[in-house]
Length: 447
Image 1 (cartoon, rainbow, N blue to C red):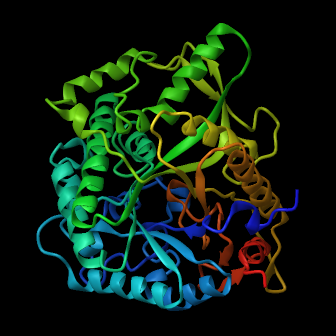
Image 2: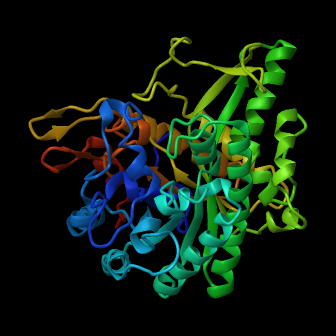
């Protein structure tokens, strides 16, 4: 199939996504407070080679050149996040004028270049001062978040109309509060359940605030999704796959849609009830204008006696001898089609937007060029699966590539490169990869 922009229709939204901590750097200047990632990266052996995001892509100082580069690649929608601690150094209280000024300049230049800003309000970097007060485990976080959201809408809402409330609550609550591999590094089922419930409440509360302050805005939130398949047709593996589906796909979308938490398949999840107060089930619900779907691969699941609570485990892609990305994820573009079909099958689901998708491969600079045919192939194949779903009636209205620049990839450090643009982290030189040129060509206005 020859992929063309026209096949998706005139109103389809094409863009790129980034996140504040992963690209901005400038971690402690101009009044910015510490975030949980600023402190987590300083703990020994938490991050690949003890790397950190103190400088990252230095986007804070280089945003002018980077936005011009984005414009030259025909990218007209830019999803970025606001660093909560840059505009509220203590998480609450006095706002930092320098932080607000930075995002004002970023928004203004985007608009000047014809690039529409899409703001993610929370992309994992909770202010450290709030973590010291319990972070996402403390129910008060929903109020702190509400005040922060109102501040953002007040300062940026005259020019920004597209908002994403949370980025992947399943990941930041599980990786940060259950497995401890992401900031703030806590471990335990009760930490996870408290963080999950408070994130779900904050998600709906944040959306209500945006709509009350700016009724004409477009508001959504984003979920990580994986296509799940059982390892065999055995009943135990099928049941294990259903349990994995609850955690990886259903646990955060269903309360938002008014269906409550799916706890039937995994009894331990019923412990979330101790964090649920009167009227919370209504507070969890909100009619979003869109749902952001973020998919990278599929997971094959088998029964395992040795995994507590779940009795299920992922069969690694490496052991299955399939094609892998630098993250050891299976290259399986069809996964995108399946998750779009799955999410679109919910009753009352709003339109979907693919708010992240991409692949990390080892990239090499040769003669000041980066040829990345595997990434080009991955993007072509996955975007073709978005079109397949759309042609079958799925209301999918946009696609944002992850990511614009190679960046700090959380616990994996700088090793996996997802960018359409190569970054030399020693010199901060940018080189547009073959995939960036391919995407620019796809998005080119044909005359």
